[in-house]
Image (cartoon, rainbow, N blue to C red; front, side, top):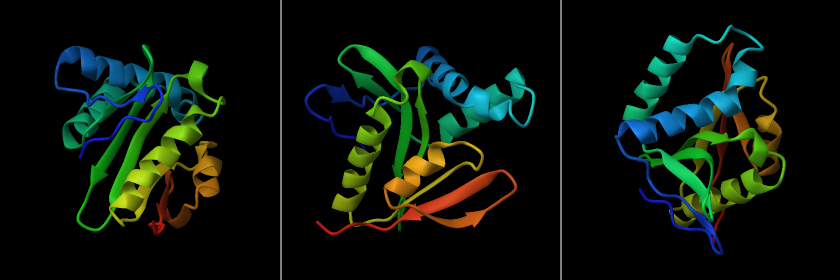
Length: 156
């Protein structure tokens, strides 16, 4: 699945398997998620790199680029009965300015065009949950660590 550009200046090139792409995606994760992870656990670099590399090998990662700025990453993957959204990491200097809402709305429009619901998960103490609820996501289950959400497809 590819992610179309969002005019006027947002692009989502797919990241590849070269070390530079993997490192960029990890740095986006560390910058965006690190503060939330260390609220519960110490940052374990080896564990986080291993987890990241496993996730990176299992799903497509896209760079979020506005003009020539690298804002972060996301993953969008079509499954048989839903679209999986995740690895949505914006560097802190790009948070709180509306970019996350714009990007999420774009990804939801792509899923809606496929008439598929969108599923995601996040650390339940991460404030990003309020963004997802504003866009129609409902909690479908919860673990000790994660909140699992789904948003039904909206008819076109």
